[in-house]
Image 1 (cartoon, rainbow, N blue to C red):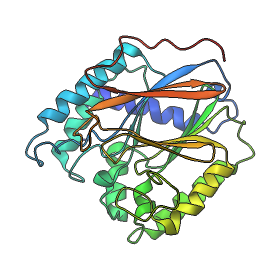
Image 2 (image 1 turned 135 degrees about the horizontal axis):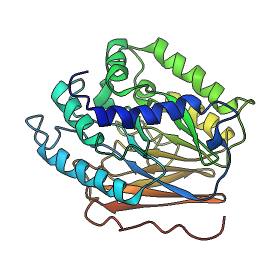
Image 3 (image 1 turned 90 degrees about the horizontal axis):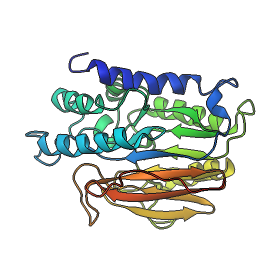
Image 4 (image 1 turned 135 degrees about the vertical axis):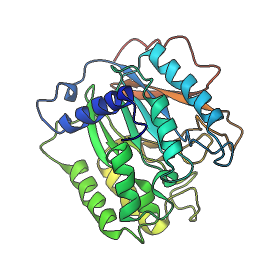
Length: 295
């Protein structure tokens, strides 16, 4: 594939091989091995700063973020959608993958599709284009006794041109959340692009959330499955909300900010009895992460 660097191919391959093994009972990552942390980013959106004229600012910010990850050595890095600004743009895709390829090969990289990656109203063609360039748009993996689930929320936001694909993802998700053959995870955590809601589960439909007509049933499935947290992007700013015990976390952009929060990333610490997370501006990321004692 043009522009797909060898190093980036290694990083993505590591992630997807881990994901492929995640459903196996023999997966060594299915058991708790002690506290760990991961890095969540969102909305690098290559091309947004300049209106698709260049990717200079996004390249600088994303490079800085990848360098932080290489220094901190998280369990993995996840990027919650809008990898590029113009769906399918080969120059933006190449630039994103080139910088992503800087990630140390020992750190798995997990990608999440956003509306700017598969179009606001995805089609079978736009979904296939994403899969060819970035990998699957829904999958799951284990790490450290936790189960991580990646879903394509653009398909849920507007499935009108890809109803079959939406139904396929829905059937997969229901099975993933209820499969009795899986070991019971310490935490079940979901990664997606759109937040289900910003403040309350019954808030009106908006560009930023999932429509009420579909929101309720998904929240029901996630709650019943005991999901601890849902980490999202899309808003280009930070916000948190709760639905019962489940936390909905929208993370600010590593790309162009649209709210008060500057470009940055989130460090998520995973303990047996809790999650702890904090958003850091890209110029204020700590030199190291010191996990708390205890569980």
